[in-house]
Length: 149
Image (cartoon, rainbow, N blue to C red; front, side, top):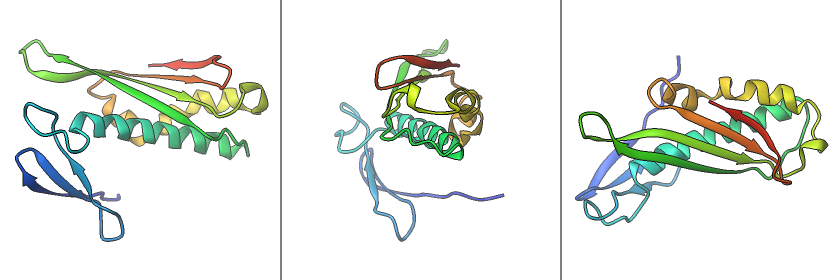
């Protein structure tokens, strides 16, 4: 088992400095107004970034196993924030769209990579236990290659 840890230090109100270890730069996170000042990404944005980064890494790894170069990848992630039945704000769903940097026709074994990459994404599979996550993959020509939930 591996442990991952971060350290958060309150700077002011809802603004926190997040440290990831001695060799990495710190990150400032903050809630948007009216709670915070919006001086950094919000916790919901950080969650979206984590899901999108992990999915992109996983797809890249799956394609590189077949010695394919899909770069540059681009990922957009949107979270639907709304109220749960108790009236509390929650992330109700996440949709990630990954755009390949090349046409699908230029990649060998793309179907095999698309069939398996989501199952290896540590963050997304963990988040999915509580939040529905939809993943779409398109190529540079706009062709929808994968629509997974």
